[in-house]
Each structure stands twice: as C-alpha cells, then as structure tokens.
Amino acid sequence: MKLTNTLISKAISKVVITAAIAVSLTSAAFAAEQTLIKNVKIWDGTSKNLSKTQDVLIEGELIKSIGTGLKVAADVEVIDGGGRTLMPGLIEGHGHLQMNGTSLADIENNRNWEELAVRSAAKAKMALMSGFTSWRDAGGMGAGLKKSIDSGVTDGPRIYPAGAFLGPTGSHADFRNFTTPNETFNGPQSSGARHGMTVTADGVDAIKAAARQNFMQGATQIKIMSSGGVASAFDPWQLDAYSAEEIRAAVEVADAYGSYVMSHAYSKKSIMRCLENGVKTIEHGFMFDEDIAKLMVEKGAYMTTNMHAFSPYLGDIEAIKSSPAASRKAESAVKAFTHYIDNVKKYQPKLAFNADCVGFGDSCLKQTDHEIYLSAKFFGNHFALKSLTSVPGEMVALSGNTLNPYFKGPLGVVKAGAYADVLLVDGNPLKDITVIGGNKKWFDAKSRKADGIKAMRLIMKGGVVYKNTL
Ligand SMILES: [Zn+2]
Image 1 (tube, rainbow, N blue to C red):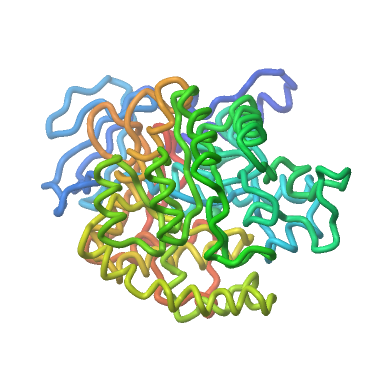
Image 2: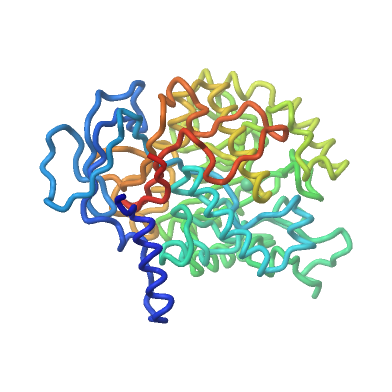
C-alpha cells in the first residue's frame, strides 16, 4: 500500500518529536514534489457544469497543470480519481473557531483560555476534515491558532483571523454581565476581552487603537459590530451601534494596512452606512434589498449570510433558547427579514458562506451541514457551491498583498497556479449537495464523525492529503 502524505507527515512528526529537534514543522514541507490526480471530472469553483474527464498535476502546494497526457516527473505520486468529481476545498466565509461554548454567556463565564484553546484546535481539525481548507474568522482570540496550523503543530484550515471584534459599549461585542461596571470607570474587562476575543471601543481614537492592536497581533482584516445582534445581551438587533465617523475610523486603519473592514450589520440603515463609508464585507445583511444591491456593486462589496436564520429550527439554538430576550429578538428579526431570500435571488450579490457556529463539536458539524443544505435549497446548488468556494476565495484576498498570508495563488478555484486545496467526492455536487455534507436535518440529524462525510473521499490542502478513503 502506498503511504499517503498524511501518513508520511505523521511518521516524520513522530521522528522529530522523539528526537526532540526544535524545528518548525510545516505541513507543506511534506507535500509530495508532484502528485497527479488522474481521471477526474472537475468543478472549478465557477462553472455551471463539470468538465470532461481529465488529470490534475500538483507540484508542491500549487496546481501546476490540468489536462490529459500531462508531462510528469519520474517519481510522481499518482492518485486515481476513478471518474469522481474534483472540486475546490470549501471556504468558511464567516466562522469563529475560538468561540466554542453553548452560548455567548457560556463562553464568557465558564470557559478559560486553556479550554478555549484546546477546543479551538479540535474545532479547526473538524473543519478541515469536513472539507473546509480555508476559514475567514469573524472574531476570536487572535492569530495563535493560525500560526500553530501553518507551522504544522496542529491540523486545520488556512485561517484569516480578524482577532478581537470591535463594538461600542453595550453592543454585540460587549460580553460583560449586567452587573459589570464600565471599564472606563475602573471596572473589570469581560473574560472575552481579556482573551482578546472582543474589545469595547467607543469613539474614533479607541477604535483606531483597537484596530491597530489587532493588526499588530496578526489580524488579516478588522471586524466591527455596526448593528445589534440576536444572541447578545444588551442590544436590540435594530441598534445603530457605530456612527459613520466611527466606521470610517476602522476603515482608515484597515486602508493603511492595505486590508479591509468586515461589519456585522442587520438593519438597512447600518448596512448602507457601512457601504457608504468603505466597509467591504457585510456580515449577515438580513435587510438586503435593491438599494443595498446597487451600492454593493458600485463599491465592489461582498456579503455573508447565515441562512439558518431562516430555518424552522432557529428557536432551538441553545444561545437563543436559553435567553427569553434573545428568543424575543429572534422572533422580531425573522419577521423583518422576510424579503431577504427573494432579494438575493433577484439581485445575485456576491454572497459567501456563513455558518457562524459559536458552539462546539457535534453541534457545529450539524449546524454547518444544515447551513450547506439551506444555501442550496434557497439559491440552487451552483450558487451555494460558489458561495463556498470562489466567492469567499475572492473575498479573503481583500486582505491585500501585504497581509494576505496565502498569496502564492488564488483560493477557492481549481486552475493552474491556484493552491492545491481540493476535494474528491463521489457524485456531482451540482446535482446533489449531500456529497459535501448538506443535511436537511439540523438538531435532529444523526451525529457524524468529523471525517464522516462518506462521499468526500479525499481532502487535500496545499498538496498534502489529510483524508483518503479511495
Ligand atoms: Zn459571527
């Protein structure tokens, strides 16, 4: 039996650990020089159809060429795709690897740094083993997890971290308890703030300092909370949290770093204000309509929306179920967001996948699988698949030439020069979304192992095989 790269990588890791050699392990270093994935139909991340059967040659961490009768090195490693579908690895457009409790209050009150850190490493591995080879993090503890993955300490997707999300006092970013005094008046910080997960920043100067601090600590983009949320304690979702001046302050710092701002925004007023003041990606965007669609095109902006907000199971989310205020907010939000799906169908914005799971383990696998199903159900498989691949691939590149950690080629597409982040699946995802995990059920879904999407036969990131059941 041929050794897979993962096995080789594991074997080498073992040798290095027993020899206690203090070297930084880079997964990519163990990628076979050349790998030929033969006999596959390709979905390239954008096309409406699969290609005819051909071969994909990978050299190091990039795709070198695609075609038939390709010239290969004598020691090329060959994988026979057996006529299956090769597609780009999935990209989470808005997730939280380091937020992993049953609710925001649980994360705030019951989880210390070591539990959060261990859980986040496990969650990153689960994401990769579910086919997510890249991940835009919408707020978490910082770049430590990303660095650990990139250096081969633990397995996970490529991460674009936002670091601590910024919001004003009492906003969606304020994790303190009702009884906690304001920090400004010598009150303690929230645990979330101490962990570098969230930062309360009121006014232009505080926002600029917080954004600079995030970049200093390895953020690739800045996340702000410009409107209220549902699962948080103090803010109505309609809250117009940041002024135009405050939004511009964050954008100004991001511009100076060649990067961009992503903003949590529900209400139309907040969304329009963000776009008018330079925010490049709207998170959630539930009041999306014709005016917003036009402005997004004019500004070259993107949107990520968690479709489970429209799921009949919404009220069963622990973070909502456990809080009467959040349940009430969810009810009023659902009523206000009734036109979202029709408007997206009509105006076809650049929409990226957003599972937004702040839970852990099984609950996030189920939420993500259901989110994939809903995206396909609402907008069709082709649109959903683009939102999981090429669209977030473009979106993460907004972090710019200097800050983009993965700058050697595009992500989310299968073409020569792109990163060799690919999946091999049984069947055609354009016709059957279950082959990448899509599941009609949510909380009542059968638990699956992290690598238990049976139809997903091969997972490769940067030329390294992490799963191979061929
Ligand atoms: Zn989020």
